[in-house]
Length: 189
Image: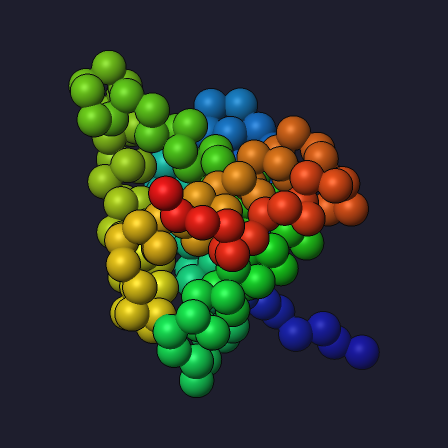
């Protein structure tokens, strides 16, 4: 019985998934390409045939992270507009809680970008921030266009998303009482 060989694209996909998990847990600086290679079942030299360097691998994982969030939002809001779409966006963010690594990766992207705006960060921090800004703006624009909401309303739903990320990061379980009060129905003052 012969097994089919994986294409480079299939292996690339496995490496991106492994990188997302490893970077989510260790951040850009705390994650080695050797750990990603081990998790993905490829050699480190082969990993560098797929990605020219660690930064390119991190950016691929960041892209996957934000595109996964975007897909969840798009699917949740499909066919909806206005307040119904906004409520669906909130629910989509809550649904993302099932992937702790996805939410942690999002936070790691922000950490890796620290200092990009004021020049105190590294050149890599600036490149990561520059790469991620349009992905973030795309999420914002998607929600605003689908819902017809004001900036304040979109800020509210993204604020809920960020709060959920923080609660996941510090290990507060979904069943905890504080989650019950996280809602779009709270007044915007």
